[in-house]
Amino acid sequence: MMRIGTIGTGFIVDNFIDAVSKTDNAEVVVIYSRSEDTAQAFAAKHNLTKWHTDRDAFLNDPGIDVVYVASPNSLHYQWTLDAMKAGKGVICEKPFVSTRAECETLCNLAQEKGLFLVEAITVPHLPNFQLIRDHLDKIAPVRLVQLNFSQYSSKHKAFLEGKNPNIFNPAFAGGALMDINYYNLRFMLDLFGEPENVRYFANLAHNGIDTSGVLIMTYPGFLAEAVGAKDSRSENMVQIQGEKGYIKVPKESSRCISVTVITQNGEETFNEQADDNVLVYEMREFAEMYQTNDLAKRDKFLEMTCRAMKWLEIARKDGGVYFEGERRYVD
Image 1 (cartoon, rainbow, N blue to C red):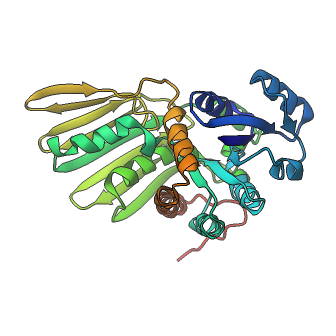
Image 2: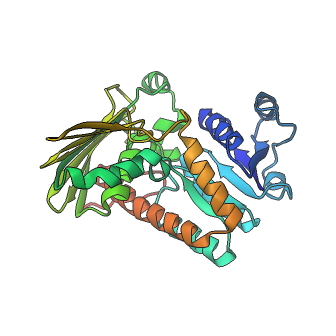
Image 3: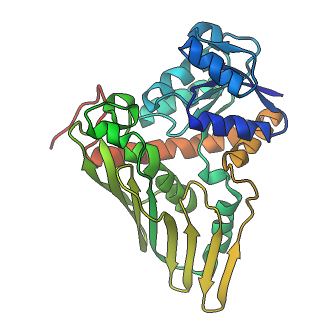
């Protein structure tokens, strides 16, 4: 049984706990929050009787096997590092960390200590994402890919009023690329591999954070355009155009709620995802990996995460987005 302690009390933790409840051999046993009132209320909401407000007590709780990290982005690295130093496995919410160097440090530690470590990112675990891979040959060769994941942030109004919510704060590694366009980046990397080049054209706010932007990825023979926005809305979708037809996914890349393949032979729609909570699919795979101690699969997913962190950092800095403590290099 994977006994999980969670960090964070946002909506993503609600969804994660729901996903765990639908997964065999896994359960959430304790939650952590710095605030006693928040911790108690969140625990009660999920019918849990145990919570911590002391960081060390939480990390050293013998009843926890795996820590789920859903803190602000900039805190992912330290929480994950400290949890593994305490002998815990970690499921770290996306984006895993802020830089490739941080990612490599954590991966090396997990391998040295033989610990469970994965990034909670829906895309590679979705059954419908696998269907896209299976049907690519029907439309090949690919020529263009378009992705749009735009979601007007509930925090944007406060940001415009001069407040400093984490999601729009460089000190907390926020921004549209890290929060929302990362799903599009992972979709491309996990489906097509590494690009030849990446460019990021960002709408930058007064504090240097990207509230929206367009990611351009160059592959041999085709181009991809990925839009991610926290300051505006759109009809979210994925469309892969090939010489023999095209594949379309309604809604955002993070969910892949269905897959339609259109060729000269007609149109087919597929859907192998019965649960609306898409975190279910990653959680079930994580639980099985943990139960079987599948370190080879752990290393496969960590390699995919490190590759993503590499290109995420390249794209972010190309768009002029730098976080607290990072140095800007000017040619």
